Image 1: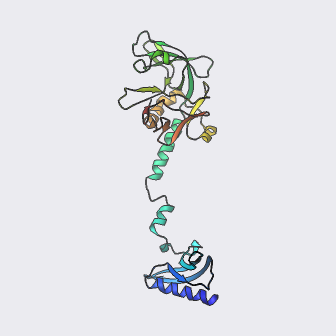
Image 2: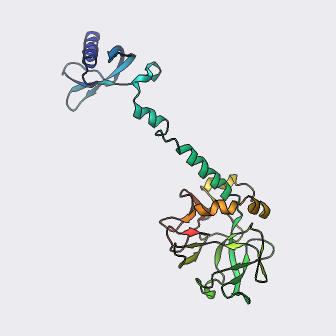
Image 3: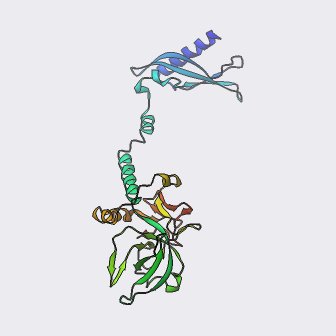
Length: 280
């Protein structure tokens, strides 16, 4: 057995040293090696690879033996023996921008979770008396009193479609005076590129007014930061930094940066039918 092993090792060394393939086929019906490793010293193109083990594996189907490189102990392998493709795969494919892109989107996600986005329910809606394009809604967002919110949806959504409707509310914007009515929040909606079709985002079934909405996985709920104050949202332009990355995907689900779903504890927020649409 030892003599046969040494013979095959010597044959392999000559084959590789002479520029042949590092893989060779040995036919035998008498020898029976199975996944055995042994060290040899090989010289090829003036590069020395010390103690590279060779793996002999038995193919029962053809009664053949395959002799090929096996880095059983990579600690003894010279760095020159590692291919460029292996090095790139270990370093993430050699993409110099991958870490920067990941870090940038992580920051956008963190900023998104400073927004106080909540499930709301419209209790009552009516036309603004001083502005033809505006509705005024009374919205339950889980607080002691409902909020008054103005929205420019007259052109897109019939008034009777707003009554008793579950919606998504951005709740930590500074209040704004909208033609004599102080609006304290924003209803979030998806719109196509032409802005001719607009749909309110809707929370998943089982959501309750006041439920917080976040970006990420279900597990991220336990690590959410406190929402930023309205002053911080305005001063640091947090909404302005997040909004361009907020869209619906191919299934009309709301997603941030193409990877962080917008969700409640009951599931993912979505638009009724608008795919790849902007959200604001």
